[in-house]
Image (cartoon, rainbow over all chains, first blue to last red; front, top):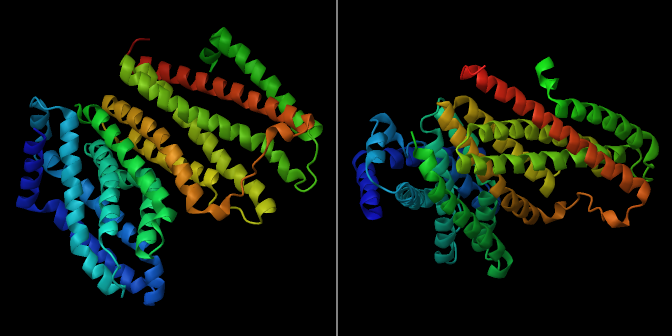
Length: 220
Length: 224
């Protein structure tokens, strides 16, 4: 059932590209603002790059997460989905993994302009960075699906989502920036493994919370 | 107002709170000794710490109410959760005001990204979102469920926030690491008395707020 739901999420998104396009366009715009508002000094940009990258990701993701339930809301399709004999936890997993894949795709598309516009040097190795980004995405989207599900039927949902999302994301965001700094600035892993642990703990806690509570979030 | 004090327990609690608070203020200003390096600034410690303790107790009650709301399926626990969230946020706001009052003369600046202070600020922001969700979330039954979930998630987030901020800025471990067993009795006794007084005050406020909420609920459902 999970695979079917995941396919449905990916298929719907590939047809209308609503989440991906909104995140990509917004991400590129924010990147443009970063490029103009920073000093233009590559050394300073190099120092700030991990923080800027995750700011970009969180801001873009909030826009995409807002549209994660957009189709269901606009066409009132959620009631039909809920009437199907599907475990709500599985619904959460499908939303989580699809949101993760969309965000990861945006990061792949945006990372080249990010390095180019800010005049950053290429990292020595890519794999640890990819691991950090994937773990960070899992955490952001886990909380994002919970909060987006809550805000979906609320008035002012576009405002409510970031107001709820950003403070809850604080520990993950700190850990993401610290771990990315460790990797990008070639600091030995033993000095930043604590942050990877915080990220993993966060993913487990909020992944489980989403799985358990999604039934109560989606209930009419 | 009179309906609030029809309950004997509340009347007693109210009188006890007033007496305790009067004695507490006297103890803080006239019995507790001056600490040489901090002078009057240290006196706020007798208010700041008990308020901080009450606010975290309150957010713990929000979490427990959220869990009980799902177990018992009773809207009473939603009202307890809301009452605790309101009082907890009021107390957190007071913590964020009294903290900088103490910090300005002691640290030389009102704000430092210190773990406990930062955790309190982030919790405050989470609860701003909580009240916005309460206000704009839509149908009351749905909002009750969402608020219960958010109350649980906020409390689960506390240790992660604390440890991430603690190791994010290790240079800012400036919060007084008070070894309580090394403090003289003249400081310890007023401190624990103040903790007790604010806890009683908190219980009184919570009880009154829940009573008002129950009354409003009965009015809405026309059971009066």
